[in-house]
Image (cartoon, rainbow, N blue to C red; front, side, top):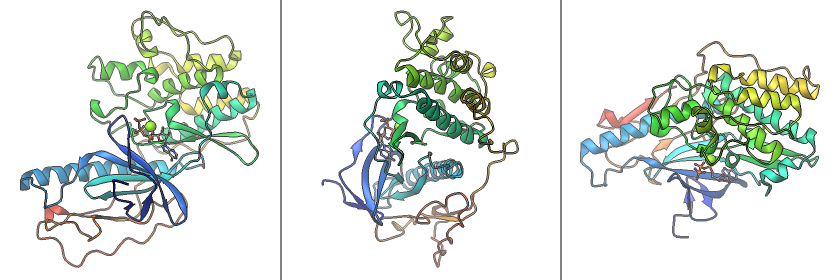
Length: 365
Ligand SMILES: Nc1ncnc2c1ncn2[C@@H]1O[C@H](COP(=O)(O)OP(=O)(O)OP(=O)(O)O)[C@@H](O)[C@H]1O
Ligand SMILES: [Mg+2]
């Protein structure tokens, strides 16, 4: 392999592959388990040996710390939503100037939307309910998933042979009250909501909400049920969101059972405020399938309440060079604790602070 073969104890199976957005990924092994590792393209936190000015180094490291804090808060919230079908974050660290995120490797079925559309109705309803529950939990944390599309849902077979949907890739996720800059909003045009299009393409200053996911999920439900997207005038409009913004309409297929079709129509309304929230979507799916009392929804958190991480993480960036001889400069617990687990003990503080306090930043969030 051209790359290094071990990254923070993870034995890489291959060189990193390039993703379209500039990040890279590969599979790896550690502790007898299989992992998926993504290496972010940005930010890059330089070593002191790099030929940047000190100001530039400070600036880049500050960007790294901001990135780390933001992602860490999102990942902690995602891990709190774990119900078995969210592929949670197991590790997140800086290694040789770049950030890496690790999740369990899913040995996914080789299956496409046509195969899903061909499943028996009860299996399709189960998939829809799984996705609705995942999304509802994220929304209860005020997290916008923001990148719903088939590539971000992997399918595994349960022991009983049924397909189970696993939600991956939380790297586009953000808190509703802490939106990224416009360039940081994930943009898979076939699936984006009209208001996302207004912000990204039309330059409008709108506050995006969790309802963007409701719209995208409405499209995905349609795709999974029928094997195709709702019809719209494709000669006139490139994507569903544009059809709605320009006064066109989306036609929900007559092959979808009427009550589900009505729900999808509501999810695809142009105005976010007119769409149902995910709690309603899940309840309606349960009513349709006759199991409304089977599972109680998780209680909604108090408005704005996002649980803070209960353990301390130390970020150490020495002005003299990498903090550890192996190239790792962030000391993290082996993995992020899952819900209900006792947090691992925080790593010991280094003996002495760096002579430049800027580069020594203990965070507790
Ligand atoms: N935990 C995992 N197990 C197995 N395969 C995975 C896992 N996570 C991601 N993948 C595979 O790698 C692909 C890319 O991963 P991911 O969705 O995280 O990257 P991305 O940033 O969305 O990339 P792009 O923008 O190019 O789609 C996924 O579509 C999936 O096929
Ligand atoms: Mg993805």
